[in-house]
Image (cartoon, rainbow, N blue to C red):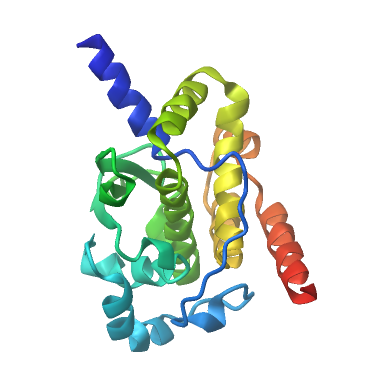
Amino acid sequence: MRSLLLFYLLITLLSCSPALRQTELVNDSPLLAQYRFSNEPIDSLVVADALPALEAAFGNQKTCAPKYRDKFLAALSFYPELKDVEIRVFSKQIKTSMAVRPHRFHLARQNRSYTIYIDDISEDKPVDFRKASYSAQVGCFAHELAHIMYYQRRSNVTLMRSGVSYVSSQKFRSSFEKIADNITIRHGAGFYIYQFATFVLEKAPISDEYREFKEENYYDNDEILQLHEDYVERLSEK
């Protein structure tokens, strides 16, 4: 029983672990293309107009409440690799704004599925996802999808090794969110995770303890913007 519990713990942790090596990825999705590698906030009316096409392209095997579905599908437009992956979005009281977990673990990567939890239940959380801008909420989804990208691209053996490292290594844990942000940037959604980081660090009434936690484990908003702009500049030079 203890070994089974440990196995489940490792798999759960792995669902949030990004790649330790960064891979440049090409996003060939034409939907919402004007926002890829852009510094332009996402317009909810533009997404609404594109929603039927987004549903056709990315809605397969996707479960999400209507109040979040447009933002979720807008974030998925940056990740055409995930268009046929089963992903569910549910509300749950958790420590962070969002978290992704495996819903059905399978030895075959193409059969894996995932659940993204949103904490829209807690009323006294300093960081309330619902109070962020439309673009920032899309960015938060995009960050969680980066974790799924990592999970999908790793073998079961590598996932198990990463799980052990996550539990045992502070250095590994500290790299976790930052590399996910790099995956997001390479998919063209860097400006939107910058907007969410700006909401958290400059607008939400966070405590000094929480700010210290963010500084230790995440890029700050200025760092994200710089990484995003540097990457866009490199793309323009190719």
